[in-house]
Image (cartoon, rainbow, N blue to C red):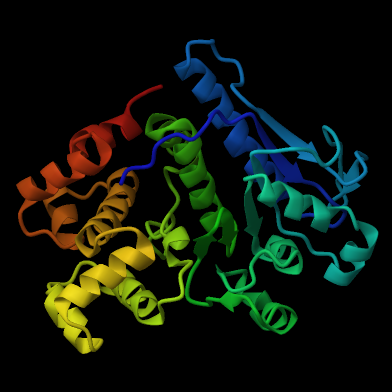
Amino acid sequence: MSIQPNAPLRRVSILAIDGIFASTLMQAKDFFHLASLRYGKQLGQGFKPAFETRLVSPDGKEVRSFSDVVIPVDGVLEHSDIIILPAFVEDFDTLRERYPQILPWLREQHARGAVLCGEASGVFWLGDAGLLDGKEATTYWRFFNEFAERFPNVLLNQEKHLTDADNLYCAGGTISACDLYIYLIERFCGAHVAQTVARDILYEVQRSYAPGRIGFGGQKLHQDVIILQIQHWLEEHFADKFRFEDVAREHGMSIRNFMRRFQTATGDKPLHYLQRLRIETAKGLLSGSRKSIKTISYEVGYDDASFFARLFRQHTDLSPNQYRQQFQQAA
């Protein structure tokens, strides 16, 4: 299942508060403003923004960053399609008291269908709003203990740099936030815009992890614990050689029962789910490395590069070479 653009993206709001890390605030601003310009060009309206990217504060007033920079804002908390919650260095309890408007705003916007994204300490807003209860989340490693104590009902995953569940996205730090923004740009603006933004900003970034797991969190919001365990196993072993019959037997199920339960829980057939895991990983390797198609095919679990190429086209409508060329070509 390739990512298809959603309904038109109209506004991205980036929360500005006192004690904010100015770099994380402006990183989000630059990513989405560039995407807006690229998207506008693609839509044939010239090099003009196709959607708004606004810095907002609870009272519409300027804020003072962690590094003592005064940052003007564009307005107050407002209806948005995407909300970014950057990292901050202020005491969280102090911020909650200073800005009582934030939590109800987040709950209201999420109920309206907005995508909410927290980076590092910014994830605390999502936890405090109660939106992450019973859902997977992550944050910056220094905050693991405090986050777990504050929000015991949240499924904190200390092994992941990115999580997603029910339009709620968590990024552990700066690089994972970049990957999150590229994913959302692809989701709302299409692959070509995402690839040009990634090429312009992220070409030299080296990761210690694979960002290709994002986009599957919504399929984990079910109550079948065994199937959830198998989903996590697949994320770790997607490139291995195995049979679903053996996976089913190891979890006490017949293959027929496994197939039925997996599709009921996730909405996806096991083989298609596995293919998506492999293709999403391959997309990251194609855009972020110079490895050959054959090498990438092998690394994601396919010995036959021709079969991999056909499968990649089925999921993305592009060949692996076309996908890579879109990323590398000049704007």
